[in-house]
Each structure stands twice: as structure tokens, then as C-alpha cells.
Length: 386
Image (tube, rainbow, N blue to C red):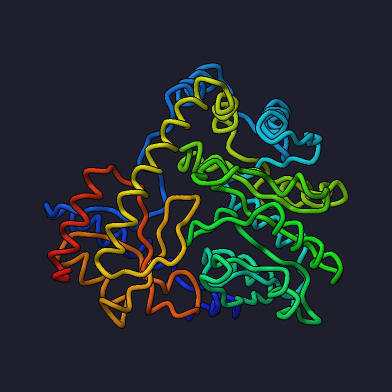
């Protein structure tokens, strides 16, 4: 027997990865599968970014960078905030990380002592609570519903606050719901959390994928907010494993020291490639993709509603629809398994996103082409006679 650490009892599987693996096996057997389960853009990384990575490799850029990241990339990220959101950020506050996951690991490790709790919305991204568990903190998953756009509010946070609460983690746009927090709502959250002696962490990794609202950043509100972002979703660089963190000045030193110890630096080639991500030619490509995601949402959302799935809130960002499926099943996990096996459509059951009635929800990702979505909807109608 291998004595596994006790904390691993609280680290649950990422069920969507199991579904993806099963879907890949079925494809290897010759089955046609429509993928609406995985939160990964179907578009490949824009060509100018790929070419920049190739050029960096050819030039021998294969050595470690500083733990906080290439100075030129941190300056480019700061320039992106200034140009896109009118917010001046000192590049010294920016830490480039191995994906947003690396940023979350840094933040939770630096902020949370054993036994301290972090409030977060339920439903929410499953790994968030596991990053808290990893440092022996206590994730407190607060049930939220359509009445607040599946987001925490200042009032909900105040009611859920505990003596051991250290921080609140929110996401805008959010996974799995695609809903936003306005700057006014973020300001109210920050004021409440600060008044209670806590810290606010904001996940903005889908920031560029906003459809029916004006985008913003929590960095425009205050300098003591931890903001996490990524090159994965909007920039289409999932496999490059690159994200970033903007931290309050007082936390940069501890974050830098920890980064040196747990991953030393983000991937060098990825950083050199990402220098191209903010160029006008790339942003033009990404804007065209954002418009295509909007077209996909505007097809899939009414199609699901017509079949009896309940979506009381129209998501304004990301590329997900989080649907109540009680009209078609009382077990979303069994439904997703059968839908994959019998109809060749892969979707994610609610159990991946928390404890707030997961059996009543499914997540549909519109990270596949419009013709594929049309085929997926046709198969879904036939499967459940909808």
C-alpha cells in the first residue's frame, strides 16, 4: 500500500476529461462524435503566434526566463490593459505563469493558511476548490442561481462570511454559466470583502469573449485585487500553457519566490510566441473568432430552449450554456453517458461544477463549428424525441 496524503480524498476527478477520453475511444473505433463537452477553442492558435514560436525555437530561445516572465511580455500585457481598458498597470506587478492554473496555485499558496476558507460560487469551475484544498484551506461553495446570474453578490458574500474566511474568488465571464459581473457589481464585492478584512481574487480568463456587454477589468477598481488571466481561451493558446497574474505590489515578492520554487518559470517558447498575441493582425483574427462564437451561441441557445432545456439567463461571455435539463431527465450524468454512447454527442454533466443540483444541469460548449452544432442538435432531438 502507498500512503496517499489525506488531502487527496477531497480532490475529485475532472469528469469532463473522462468523457473526452471515452469520446476519443469511440472515434478511434470509427464513430462520429460531436464534441460539446470540452472547454477548448476548436480554432488553432493564430498563425502569427505559431510563427513567432517557430522563430524563437530556431533562434535558440530554449533557456529559462526570469520566474516572473520575460520583461518584454510583461510590458506587452501592461500595454494591452492600457490600450484595451485604459488601465495603467506597472509591469512589475505582472507574473507570467504556466496557464491560469499556475496563477491560481500561486495565489492560493501565498494567501491561504491551513484552515482558512475561500468563498466561491456554486456552480463554478471545479479546479478552483481543489486549489484551495491543495494548501489545506477550506473551499466554501456558495449556491447561486439565475436570480443573480449565477454569480456571488455583495449581499451573498456578507451572509456567507465566516470567521475563518480569507478570500473570495469570482469569475467573469464564468465557467460553466458564461455570465458576467459588471464593474459596479465587482466594486460592491470588493468594498464588502475589504470591509470584512478579506481579499478579492478575480478570474478573467474569458475576458476577451464577451458578446452583449462592454468588457472591463477588475484592475480598474482597486490595486489590492488579484486578477488572473490566460492566453488559452481568447488567444487560442491552450496547449502552450501560458497565463498571467496581476497582483498587489506587496504580494509580488512572495509570489515570485514561490514561482521560483514550484515551476521556476513559464515555458520559454510560449512566452516568445505570446509576444505576438497583442499585435493588430492577431487581434483582428481573434475578433473574427469572437463573432463566430456569438453566432454559435445564437444558434444553440434557442435550439436548446425549444427542446425543453431551461436557460433562464442568456450568457454574455465565454463559450458555454449551462442548461437545466429536468424536463428531459432527472440524472444529468446518466443522460450525458447515454447521449454519448447512443447518439455520439458529448456534453458535460453538472457534477463537474459543484454541489448545487448537479443532477439537474448539463453544460454545452459551443467550441465546435456551426455545422457540427447543427448536427449535434439534430442528434439530440432524435435521441430524446425532442
